[in-house]
Amino acid sequence: MKGYIVGDQKGINSLKFVDMQEPECNDNEAIIKFHSHSLNYRDYMILNQWYGGLKPETLIPLSDGAGEIVEIGTNVKNLKIGDRVCVNFFSDWINGPIHPKYFSSDLGGSTNGTLVEYGAFPAHGIVKLPSSFSYAEGACIPCAGVTAWNTIFEAGKVNKESNVLLLGTGGVSVFGVQIAKAMGANAIITSSSDKKLEVLKSLGADHCINYKSNKDWAANVLEATNGTGADIAIETGGPNTMAHTFEAMSFNGLIGLIGFLSGNANTSLDMMPLIGKNINLRGIAVGSVEMLERLLKCMQTNAIKPYIGKEFHFSEAKEALAYMESQSHIGKIVINH
Image (cartoon, rainbow, N blue to C red; front, top):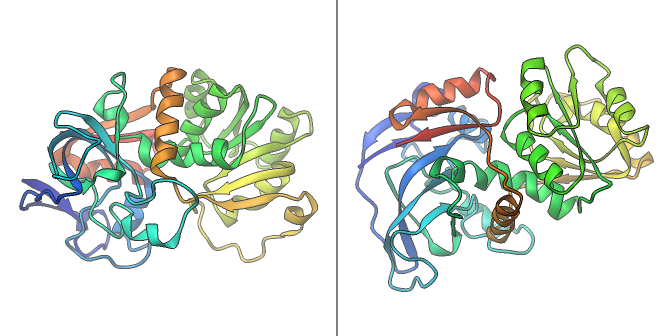
């Protein structure tokens, strides 16, 4: 079969499109014939050695993929050949809180990922897709969707009175707008592009703030919430945007820290607002299989579909990653067979 390996991880061009053996199916596994994959910024980081250092050159990248079951192991009871499925980011994290033992099962990082024609995965980490989702849509959900769901619903305990702040217009933030609106909450999103904000407005965002033309964008968040601030925020920027996020938060609010897109260099961050406002700053490491199942149910009930910004062919994985690098996208970038 055809598939990709990460190579020497000196950038996007390290990615190699190679011939490899089709996987064998162990007793507790199922083999997925992939139809679609989606990119996350983590995939780009891994190719640049910015995510846990150097990986084996033969590692298959990407955490997200959707396809159909073509073979099942003798011990597998919950799946059948022909099932339309996606696979959870941590294949061994079924339920409960995160635990160190799950980190050895993160796809495309510690173990082989999805950017192949056929992949073998533990059956307990595979989730059936509702019939209303295409493979391309299903491939968008396990990382970005579950991260947004975990922050807003599982940790944030969102309700109809909540103000939810999303930074940027990448996959997690776009899912964040959709999930917040499904829960009846007030969705506030920032971007450096008015054109991107127009798209988010069409997806239901209540307040759209251009942080490039509004340097003190936290004041805009406070204005949009009648001085209260955001009850839940998904922080994608990291330390270099955190001061503004602190200012934008409500008392007793929750910040879900999921990334460092603005860099990780700020060593003079004033932590007093964290204490003064009693803010809960929480790291979010995607989520469990059961969270993915709850999200899929919510999306089906509320007719939410992932927003796909651009699609590429399986042979164009480097081009897809270069498009991500350009930061031109909104929502998810998908690779189809």
